[in-house]
Image 1 (cartoon, helix red, strand yellow):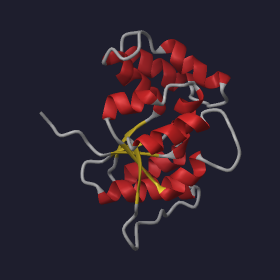
Image 2 (cartoon, one colour):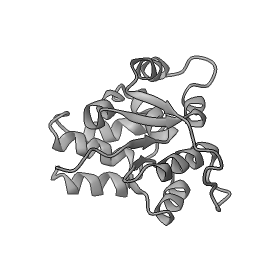
Image 3 (cartoon, helix red, strand yellow):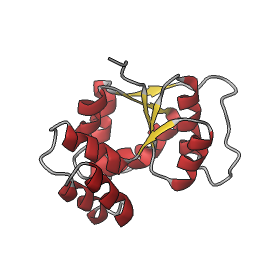
Length: 165
């Protein structure tokens, strides 16, 4: 059996899952998820917001862990890749066989150019359904829109088709 990859997350999927009270799916699927200090600062800005308590609890519990980047870490060529995405990609490049959780199209394109394995938030929900962690994926996928997190209809339908829902 293959070893569980190091899972590294960008801010968007963490915020989206926290907003719909589904952040625990990451722990149940992967055990541990790594982030960078830049991503941590993006997911926990000053003030109170939906999902903040779940994110803080995950960090305190240690299954969501902040990792340091190596000195002189990789930098993106595309200026459209934000600092959090760039740091997550740089951390993924430090880990052989890392799995990167990222939804942003520009960041995903940059990660693909680097040969990094990717999964998006919708795919995480599909994985949770296939592993029996949730009874159905469609209601959860549609819940993202109600909290202001956009996942395209095409992506949602592709994930649902892949899991036979």
